[in-house]
Length: 184
Image (tube, rainbow, N blue to C red; front, side):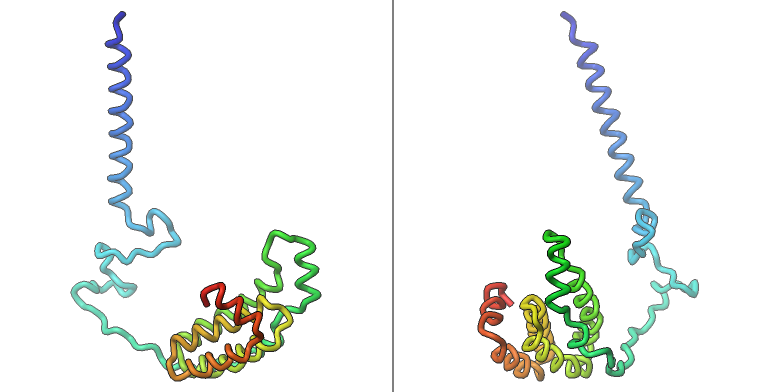
């Protein structure tokens, strides 16, 4: 039996596969992240021109400090808190998904939290609303979300930490226990 042609074909096939893989890796290495995925902007050292066409590697721009923000006066969280009836209806419709009422509340809270974590005035304005939410929300999941976010603000801004901890101590015992179990 002569197996030489079979081995030769196998070696040639594996060699061709290896060359294909290496050429693919080389092509990917030469492409910038924005060429691979248009949603990604390149921050690599090869991309040194800014929007004005100036070479930023030769002319570095000074870091700009963000302008102080005014306190956002959004609708109170209490108005955005999900109602138990809506929540239960949504759970009945889709018991395996996150109810839309919870997603909507999180969507309302997220931008305010982003601001509160970057600006102490925003944090000072939001913390009492989170405390009220942590006390008055009908749903435990919403109370926990509010208390956890109050803790994040307290961790970020030391001057607000005592107030955030006091709000947590005033929370219902079952909520404090849930926060403890969740490591929050």
